[in-house]
Amino acid sequence: MSSNVNFYDPGADSALEELEEGTGAARTGLGRNGTSRRAFIKGIIAAGATVSAGFMLHGLAGCTREVPVRGAVERLISLNVNGTVRRVDVLPQETLAMTLRYKLGLTGTKLGCDRSECGACTVLLDDVTTYACSTLTHTVRKSQITTIEGLQAANGDLHPVQQAFIDELGPQCGFCTPGQIMSTIALLKSSPRPTREEAQMALSGNLCRCGAYDHYLNSVMRAAGEA
Image 1 (cartoon, one colour):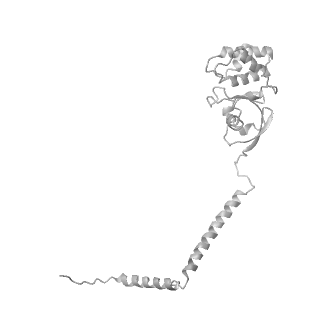
Image 2 (cartoon, one colour):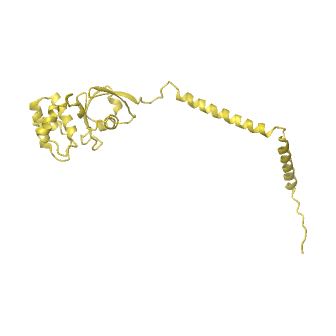
Image 3 (cartoon, rainbow, N blue to C red):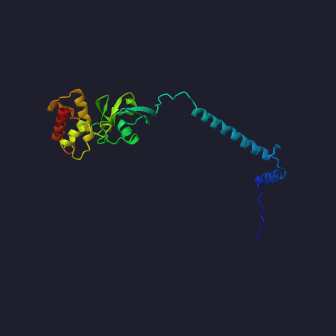
């Protein structure tokens, strides 16, 4: 047994009208207000292109500004290292040890503790011993930087301090040796004939993992006698 029941939906008529109206618009290409759909879409695309071009021009204008940003640091700088001026790209928070080793290839400056305790990274700044691991490169642009590589003579001869360290068997593993030598160089520049106690004090900031302190002190005293 079947029964036909008609349910009246008030929204059906309006939906049907909209469907018929849309079909008609599709056939004619016109909306309710008489605007072409193609023209409407073109207007949307044109508006988007205008906005995008505005952002692009604004970005390019920012890239070509000649006024430096407040707090910015010039990255391409000149450093006087071992008597030669070197141009190098340096990050704002880059340490001198990192610059010497990884930017300039001067790997004689060792990285040990990286917190100013072992002295393996010792270099000379204007003949003063300095821990390169805790010195920002940007702060030494006006200094004369000397590393272990700068001690050897142009003809290949070793510096008297280097030769004295070899003769007295100062190095064992050799990791701390560059720092020990740089500290000795600074000592002999300020006091050419130091006492053993003065040498011990001068090298007190350089740790030796092998414990070869007596060998190093012997090397200092030998270098002082031959320099």
